[in-house]
Length: 425
Image (tube, rainbow, N blue to C red; front, side):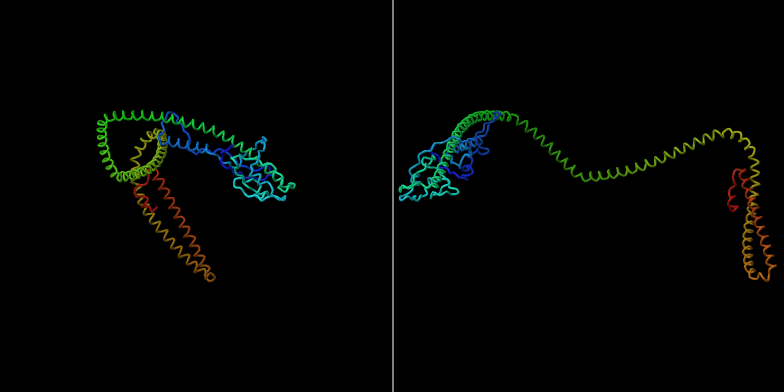
């Protein structure tokens, strides 16, 4: 279509199936802009509504403006487009000069052919800008220059390639026109949305006015209750001041409370330790109590068994008490005699030990002169044997006397006080 801005086409490798063109998609609307319709009956603010309308208008203007050709739409059209007649300027560029030689071609900034340089030779990449009237025209092969000579086959091939590329560009231009039509439809839809936003704004303003009226009514009603509310607030403030004073007192006593808490914790730990010790002692006492109860039960059984014998023997014991008392006196006298006897026996034993020691010394001294005093030594040995026999007899008498004492004391019910100490063993 005519009146569009100049487009720029970047060509790729023709051997790879034609030039590589970029996508030509409509520019998306920026985030946060465009038409916005409030949902749920809410009233948007004027600033938000004005910002939305401004964003929508900006997007519509950007869509309605002439869209430059970004180098292709990324689509291939299968329709064959008939070539149009080239402009006189292009004809002059591709026609040769006189004498069979091609005239030099000046680079026209309004027409740049993809793949062909200003001299007619193929180049790597030459952008093609819009031609006359904004439409792309196809160039037909033209005969040689004014000299009337035959056209160069290579030149003809290049011209055919240029014509093919121009036809492809025309096909892509038709696709751009289709996209423009779709964008115009979108612009109409956006305008409808803007109108809907305007209606929503009017309804929001009406809701805002009603809300303001409601707030004014509530403020009047609230003013009537402010007196009582203020009085209540004053009372609450007094209460808060009192509580604050109490809180300050409590805060001043927090140190004491912390110290008391530490003491309580320490006391609790000590109580737990004491409780553990008490439980241990209690368990031991219970064990001992069980043992005592068991022993008491055994004693009770024994007493029940010997009770009858005790009753029988009590009379005999009472009769024997007098006799035992007499025997006790005799035993005391006997113990005194035995005590003296024991002292004499101890003295005798000591004397015998000293005598045996002296005899041993004599025996040792006499052993040296055994050869000269054999008869005297035999007499001394006989004396030693006799003394040992006397000592053994005295010990046997002493042991027999002790057994007799023990039997006597057992019949009497125990030794008298001081008997064992007086006897020396």
